[in-house]
Length: 210
Image (cartoon, rainbow, N blue to C red):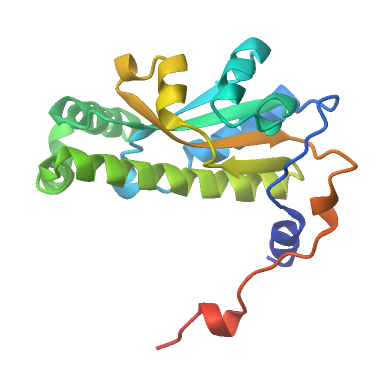
């Protein structure tokens, strides 16, 4: 745990990446596995992550992210999208996956199925999208911690135009909406932020023990 805390002190939202230092694909895959294993309400994972390497596509997306250099200078751009169509078909596929993974019948999950039908599936469309986007943020948090553990730099980003990203990536036809970004790679040696002391609220101010 001591090393984990040190890793969290080490990480920061890297603004300037070294485009010459590439993140290895095997390390990327480890980070993606950490994202895949993130906690999720009911395990439904109502999101999808686009892993973008193509420089031309990232150049287009950069214009929809206010020209921020992380979009093109990092090794990879991850676009976190939430799924807009959470319906009975989605639930049925989820239950099927549970049954196959745990070598049980779909009927064994009737209780879980009914619980989700009486909760998530009753949400309004707006509330479903709010809920799904929040789930995506849990995965982002897990990604940042995993990256810090591997001494890989990351920058979570909300500074972009989601509607423009959605158009460029043709997300509407895929029942997706972009909600947040994370760039991955290695910090530039002349990024001054890497030496800045981390500023957070004190434990006394942040936590209330009852």
